[in-house]
Length: 194
Image (cartoon, rainbow, N blue to C red):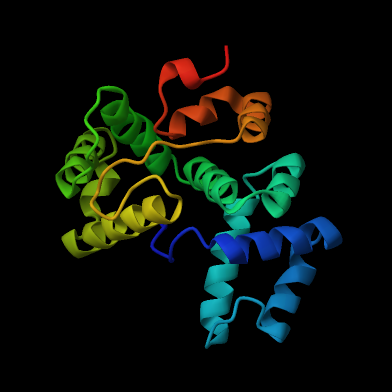
């Protein structure tokens, strides 16, 4: 539940993925990020925090996925980063499948804060540690999640779920690594590969 750091960080993630593909060493990249202010932050502590978050997400992606991230369109970059986030945070992955996708395939195209709150409280029944999270922190988590969804182009400003338009190449890539990752997206079953 430590996903309160920013949004999907699309450009920063692409930049770090490109550095990693060239250097293949996170320690070297970490030093470079801090000395050259690659993430364009005001403070070193913010750069450190942001770097850690982006690195842990990128570490969820395979080498082929990182290469695709660097060379793909803005939309596919957002979608692939959404997959990385869902892999990194099972809570978000479950929310994507159990709430967003389920609402989408049942033609309920809106996503409300109440949907999130219901999901959070349902999960807290099987994960009592969630009950320890303060209401203000719950609100912040919800705010960041909705921001990520908008940045990944999966939720419109008016809170309508936006159908994912994955490229055939991204579908193939995800199908090869783990076809279940396609369930993180608001798409119909007939759009999934057999």
